[in-house]
Length: 183
Image 1 (cartoon, rainbow, N blue to C red):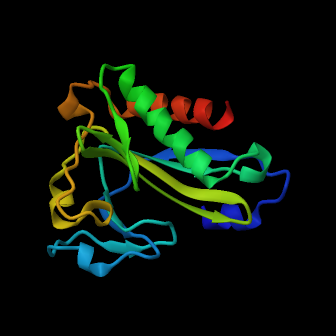
Image 2: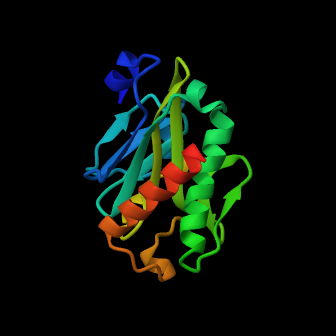
């Protein structure tokens, strides 16, 4: 992502990368180590996105959003809102009411985080992105204050009755994000 973004020019097409990570905690550039509240053998990787600490692992779709905001004609706040709305709409189409939480980027269902969001902007271009919990082991979240919020509950599609395989969730999220970013 970093190399792709650094090498971009005005003609470089945007990209959306969809993937699944092995177990890892990522700590944003302003992240505080005290938000890791229990020792685990899961690695903690400092990264250059915004936000605090989060967990990525099998059963979660991660979408890296590599967008030239100057070409899109809108700013970072608009992109964040569009990305959140993509997840809200994806869940609504499957009977789950999701929402934003003021001051806490991401998507929530009954106050529990289902999608974390953290971006970085360099020279008008974004990287990093969004992680949607689909069908995963949520236990590693208990070792952190998710996104820096003590006691923040975390949920996933499976626990909400959304029966998507990881591949189906990846396809649905990819299409939802592309529609939201380019509409």
